[in-house]
Image (cartoon, rainbow, N blue to C red; front, side, top):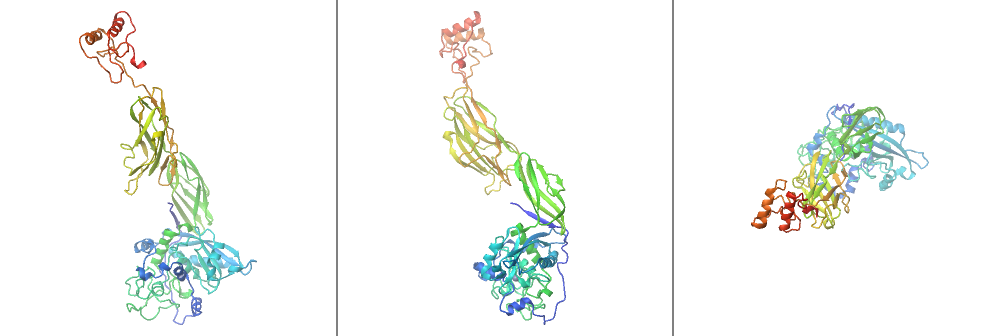
Length: 620
Ligand SMILES: [Zn+2]
């Protein structure tokens, strides 16, 4: 998993609470109110969400369920920005609709720039900055837009919706605008983004601030009153009894009926008979006129940061690329700054103690897993992006010492692993050669090795009669066992038994070539890879040892003492001696497997007549 954090150090999150004086009860009719008076709705974000997800519509029947972890107080409050906190920089993409011939555009670049200057000013106190691109899209069809054309418009013009918020500006029949909640499954698809109606966009317009609020996780401040069942479980009561768990899930935005004015509504909330006042008509997420809205609440800011981190990190404006990002032993990575923000200066931190101060550096990494950070000075401040576990370099090797074995003997190859990275899983496909003539493949064991504590050791391929056996071993399958730490030592033993009729000089070879779908593999926290394994041999040796032939009293010499012992064996009933690894008894000097007078002759000749001495049974 990749985690991106973007910090906008230059923006100081001061002034979360602002105050202003707003008007008397005779406010002029606002655009929002005029749409309502014509029977329309200025913002249809909620209606469109309810239509898409009817199962989430009747919240009261479901006890006001949450849409995700950011609806929980603990997560919301943990994300409330403090002055000087890291800030978000979010990418927007404007699509300004024009006629087919490029005329009659719904807005101008100057109006887009003015809109964004205002929107950025309004979000600055909450640690959010937007960067944007503008594209003029020619389509007479969508230059006047009806709500049954949503998928047509968006599927035609959406651009990288997983990397930026697409915003379409055109004339909307019904004069409404709408955004897409981050918990909507379509938020990062073509069907996400914002549709802005032309008269509500441009110089001195605040509708975009409101719609972006929806996209970043905010409900209307009147959600808990006018968009749920009255006095139902999701109804937000004016007595402060359920502001955190009902309505807009912010207890610092008091419930209110939909309010087109700058002053508090009159009257009482009907369930607890508490007066509505005081409310927050100055909140961007209400319907009050643009000239008197000027704030988000601290809890709304917490929801914005929480929902962004939860669902929308792909929209972060500052990023960088690296190629390649993994490899073996030593990897040279080419880094590229990737952002629509022009950078004035750069400082890269590679996570291995080195840094660089060019825009697109190249850096060589040794074994390890590295977090990479980039701090860029831009016209909107100094921004830092961190990508955790961005580069992975492994240097893992497996080896096994060669073995020598006599026929008809059980033994094992010990497989050692030297790993530079923590390993969570191995796949070990074992192939032995010459199994028909030299040995049997018995099993693979892990007892007493570094993998002994792994929770799962599973045979995944078993054709051991032809010398093939594959294991998957996993550290944690639910019990929480940690990865194998970097180090060196045995991880497995491959057990065999040499065949009875194997001959000295025969060989077998252990390899870890793929068996069916099972390729030698180690998995670390960020990737998986094939460690190096060079194989190892088994040599069959005779297993015969007769160092004491005719040396009955073993002292490495055949002497008169041995002659006496031989005579005792032959004529006095003494027992001959059988060495366990020797095919014949000691007093079998001619190697015919019998103890006879001929053997005595060989010994006497050797002792007194310069004879060659006893034979070697192992040489036969
Ligand atoms: Zn709205």
